[in-house]
Image 1 (cartoon, rainbow, N blue to C red):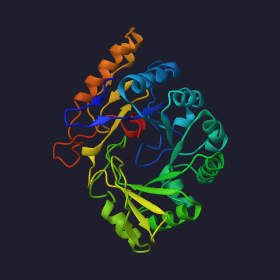
Image 2 (image 1 turned 60 degrees about the vertical axis):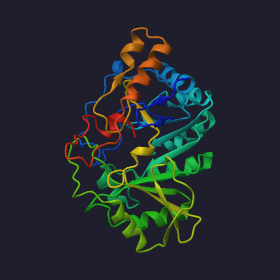
Image 3 (image 1 turned 180 degrees about the vertical axis):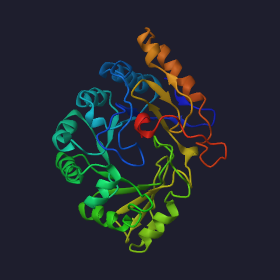
Image 4 (image 1 turned 90 degrees about the vertical axis):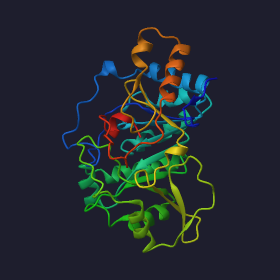
Amino acid sequence: MLPLADAYGRVATDLRVSLTDRCNLRCSYCMPAEGLDWLPDDQTLTDDEVVRLVTIGVRRLGVQEVRFTGGEPLVRRGLVDIVRRTHDLGVETSLTTNALGLQRNAQALRDAGLDRINVSLDSVRRETFHEVTRRDRLDDVIAGLEAARAAGLGPLKLNAVLLRGLNDDQAPELLAWAIERGYDLRFIEQMPLDAQHGWSRAEMITADEIYAALSAEFELTPHGEPRGSAPAELFDVDGGPATVGIIASVTRPFCGDCDRVRLTADGQVRNCLFARDESDLRTAMRAGATDEELADRWVVAMAGKLPGHGINDPSFLQPDRPMSAIGG
């Protein structure tokens, strides 16, 4: 087995697979109201191609966990079958979703072997949710969460981004809502991955601001367990057992412990969320490359990973692809 190692001693064992660049929300920090030009169908990996590359990652390259992302992965028609075939490889499988459509798919996903779900939810106020996502679908998200819990897809994690002037006053409210329902909440600093390239450091709500807002209403104490490669810094809330996480991707980057590699919906390997370069597995695969040859290409792609994402460097350039086209 060839590990997906880089020159700085990191080994990637966590594979994030984007199944589509399409989404049924239009979150203001991700894409414009009119949406984007989606990938043509012939450029998107087929179900069999996705499973083949995932299988190479697991059996030849040491991948231990696979998370399916988008865009919005629930709009991928073959999702349940892809999850089932991945689960059969013996690895942990998870899904990052906006939960639209989860109500009708949660049980099928659980039956296919899905282990966990992360749901993006930035507000539990209907008007704010509508303003952030440009869709009036909060009830569908809540119904999807309830269906996931009923199906046994737990623990359920929520991911929230705070936006100045939109929901930056709602952090304690969102945490109280999550704790009451038994959901694990993580706040994420907004990252420069929007399609509009409108991200501004001055406008970003920092981890310190999030901590201060939560501390005004809750007692937060550092969680005792080692963080490892997990991106979130965990805090016990009011003595526990509930916790809250803060992911300081920009102000306190954790690149030195990163164990992730990404595969885009069109078959490109990205060794970092903020990478400017990609390695094309799709073209080689469709040209007849063997599994061994594809694995070798993947290893080379990971070997060139930079020491960090470079957001705090004056020379930083935002990736051409937005988050919806990369996969979280």
